[in-house]
Length: 230
Image (cartoon, rainbow, N blue to C red; front, side, top):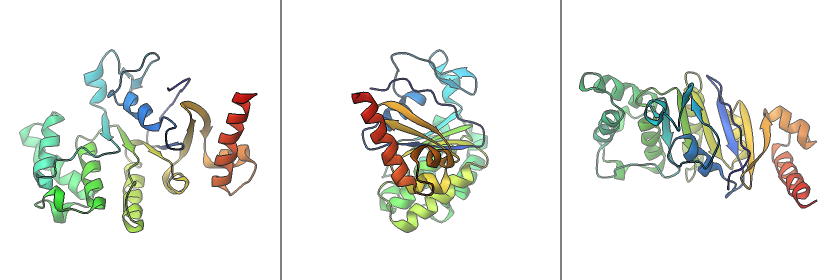
């Protein structure tokens, strides 16, 4: 259950949603993208109320779930063309949108390949490409590097950092190295509650061990458990 969460994503920022498995990260992102209806509260995307005006609000969002919504039997060009049409891009603009998404995600050499034949890393790139093909203001990525090898993780992290230069990005992860390498700010979830919001430097201050993000993260979550039991 998600409780008492308030998030603000600034333009041109990469925000990391950090927490152990089961902390509520994916559930939170599903609500932020309109895939799951919250019981209460408000969600505003670029000033548009997501609950009251879901279609115009969602037009500003690009979303990559933890399991990418790929059609493995299609080739990359076919799938991204389909994604563009779903996003309301007209026929005259589809080729340009397709070319830009492929270029940004490093997919120019695999356009004619079936998605099912691609490596896990390239499938993640295709997933990100479908999320950005309509040039959304907000990009939401759920565990975008899970299951990738070290080289693929490096490439996807570089891509996310580049996207942060022109979009607002929120990503969920349980990897502290992910936060350190690409995020401007971090929000830490623990058992559905927000227990920290700030920069990694501020997390160092709260945790008491500067330069040791892992130790400070563990200390902060354990402190929250102790406070709840008191």
